[in-house]
Image 1 (cartoon, helix red, strand yellow):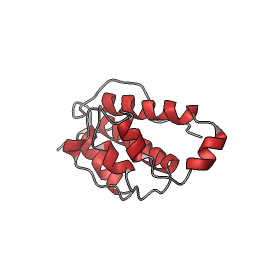
Image 2 (cartoon, rainbow, N blue to C red):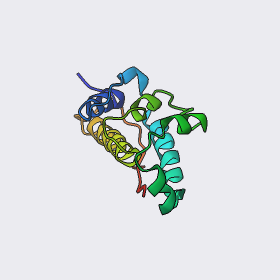
Image 3 (cartoon, rainbow, N blue to C red):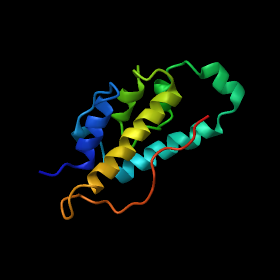
Image 4 (cartoon, rainbow, N blue to C red):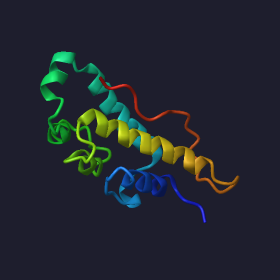
Length: 126
């Protein structure tokens, strides 16, 4: 039996202590868009501001600013994250999603759902 990107992603995320169902994970393209939006924001924050907010739970502020509008359940992964900091949380989530994409693609020929996108989730937040 084949698995979907969402099923692989939910399993990968559970390995990092995150709890989300496959049904709560959108298509890969949407996850890329949302994570890349967060990455763009994170990369725009200067070093002094990161020094101030480094240990803060930023999930509420990101929610109110609409960063989770296309994937509302992502808020629950950032809120009270077992990964600790925002940066570690984003890196762990991005790694899980990227791995899920390749796991889906690596299934035997003709079985993978195949999204055909070549983008990589994530980026280098400060």
